Length: 284
Image 1: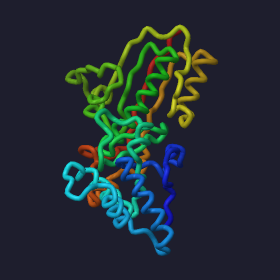
Image 2: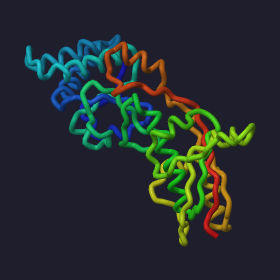
Image 3: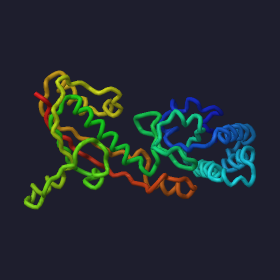
Image 4: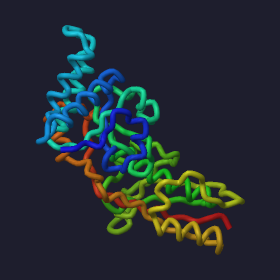
């Protein structure tokens, strides 16, 4: 079984997403020793690579026996090796190369499983929070786009998936909708219950698209709204933010990661197929 990781992984962010989606971090010394042991094993073992043996050899070559302070580092590498043994495509990244990555505050830490952002190379989240922050990032980009295009009114409704409890924990710069539902009945109450955010804005006099949009190129309906606004003076809009792909980050992966001893970085929040609708008006 051949492995694509080279002795020097300085350009690992240029790899296809499937090869660098899952990563763990280790020290430079252990990363170098592991790669050297791996290349040696590939030369002598024709039937495959024993990842556990490689990890133990690397640990033995670098970490002094009985050094309790390095126990977390050793266990992180061993967990990575066990993940490789069961077929998980987890990429080993040295501390030096991790400097190219944007992590959550307080990270990276040894033995934690990180997941790459699907549209932003170089941004990684802990597996536990991957779905929450990825959806939040997509939703925030949609809101930023609409505000830059001159929105004066925004109303966000929940259609499916994560709803009010989830939206309350988001940081998107919009006030949560404060709607009393006691006086409503039937469809009116349902509509009030689905309302998540709403905002009134002054609107931009020079509508434009923000720079560095990463979800926009994959969303034809977003593009149609932008074109309608910039070229044809569109006044009203209705845009959906869909989050339906779990990117392989699911309960099955959680079970495998737990079995091999990888840390998820907190309580795992599973994927929910979610659709939120943003409606409103642009400045005349």
